[in-house]
Length: 427
Image (spheres, rainbow, N blue to C red):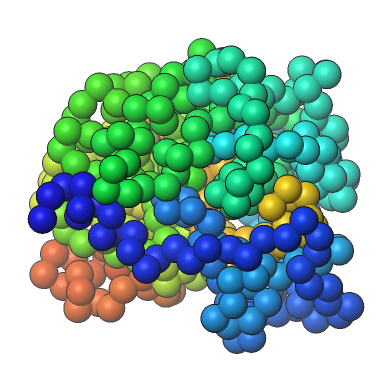
């Protein structure tokens, strides 16, 4: 089998087409009950999920199990910005540094600025507009925003973009945001358009993000990695100490002991894993999400700053993840998108964790010390909340190497890394 064929096989059957509508696809009068299901993690007992694109690490909750129609509501149902701030013990919205976070996403998105304004207004966050210099939208070459083409693929990608930008807003209300738009086709793989053809545009978009002055770059996607990609020119763009490059770890559980996904597998990139986030009468509790990505990357050395004891779990190679945040769609976050859905929806996936973590780096204001995940592993005690329950694969599937790659426990583990944020001290 050729490399191109193997890449296409990776995604076969994983992504179903969303059934999108310009108006609300469903209206639930009892949204309070739905929110309680999010808090309890029971939402998927009666609802399903669908992925947004071939390489996106985001999932949208649907109206019923087995359905590809998103569950849309006129008011937010998923976790709000305030609830996320409470879960991770973040300071008041005005506290921290007003850094710049760039997000790499695909396709045009009419109404992006308006949708972001709707989210921020709903949750009492300060405005972030193009006119006041807070928001900037460019194409992957640094030119004007991509012209929307109105295709279903582009609308699907808008769900990812909305999730990313709104999680940045929740984590760092004062941060500036730069949306860098790569071609939509690069988020959909085929035998004629494999990873090797798609990632050059992504690398160019990252370069544009760097030139925009971003202190953190969020990437909520993963491409099947090859040695040429991992060590070639497209990965050299991430060799920029002083910028926090954060990528989602993936939504398909333990990847195995051969390769992870690009770019989260690179030693200079922070891999954001995933948790389920439950709200109880005693506060918030996180468990490892059973689909959070973890892997060994045998083409590459350990991540920068990764302790030898962690790398040893992958025979001295790069082990992921590094850190984590809410990702389970059963305990998903509230997102607003007028282009793909026409209202509020509930999203999950490690695509939610990556922009949230990236924004915390920018907000903490210490990125001059960042070189990959190095500072995570030297953070003071208490900077992260250890996640000790849950797993993303059967323990025996990791047994020949190390069960920590699949099973959460005391200290570092594959699904959740060093744990979840406890304020800004770890960044």
